[in-house]
Length: 173
Image (cartoon, rainbow, N blue to C red):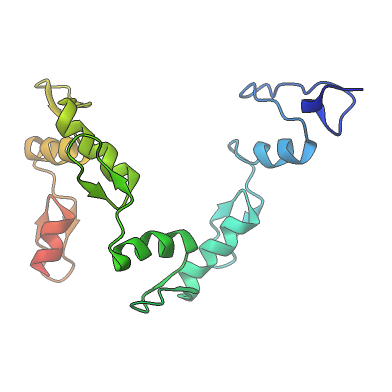
């Protein structure tokens, strides 16, 4: 009999030549192959954007219809994706399940805790290559870079005033 990790096949899995991944089931291989460039068989009939999975297309179509089927039972705010509702629920309930082991500060998202940990370690993984200045967050690096380029990518369409940061544009409105 074949080893347990080779279920439903008589031959050991062969690696894909593009990425060298192997799959024990042909259905998993087929699904994975859709992640490689070029094959997106599910196309939106409204904007012609294509997707590798039908579920991604169904999710995308909601952006056109405005349908937000996932509603918060506390504040009635609605979301397209259930994962966005789940994240929102933490805000409504005040639940902050991610706690810093050093200072006990709590966070709604694991990514925010990870970012916070940089304040304790002193790590600044985002480096501005011209002046060797480093930043804890990639957004801070991007903002700093705009101060040198004088680029203001956020424009208010009524007054045509431009801003380096989207938050400044929102405040202006």
